[in-house]
Image 1 (tube, rainbow, N blue to C red):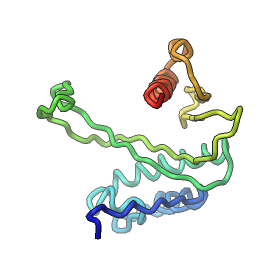
Image 2 (image 1 turned 180 degrees about the horizontal axis):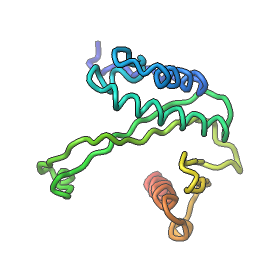
Image 3 (image 1 turned 120 degrees about the horizontal axis):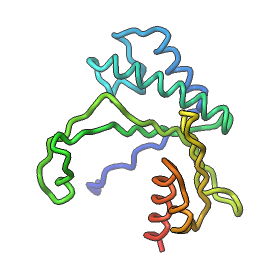
Image 4 (image 1 turned 180 degrees about the vertical axis):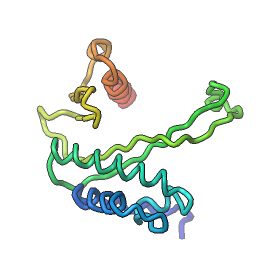
Length: 166
């Protein structure tokens, strides 16, 4: 034994299977039976939050299926947090008064090999108010500045990651 933890297994679930499991939970609304994929996150007391998450996942899977079709996907969950003091001193090693709130973001995504001419990243928000984001390799700072609304966050991150990788 080297003392290095094993790399976690990478699992991909077909988007329709994920949608079906979330849909079943939403339709049954059984407080005592959380789906296996939600139970570790929300625990026995988090049924209301898990139900809200399952509804969001159904919507995200529907959008994914409509935009990209059936394929294996991964899911990332980003819980929302609020700092009661409105500061971010934790970046400097200080203490915070951070709490979780009942909001979160789910990213349902598929990875595909990069090919010449294909976008580096495509994001589609489930809220139709926001247009899709398509980022190609070597996104420029000028393109970031020209981006609008939520797209600016994505393009800025892609640009920064590419700059960091150089």
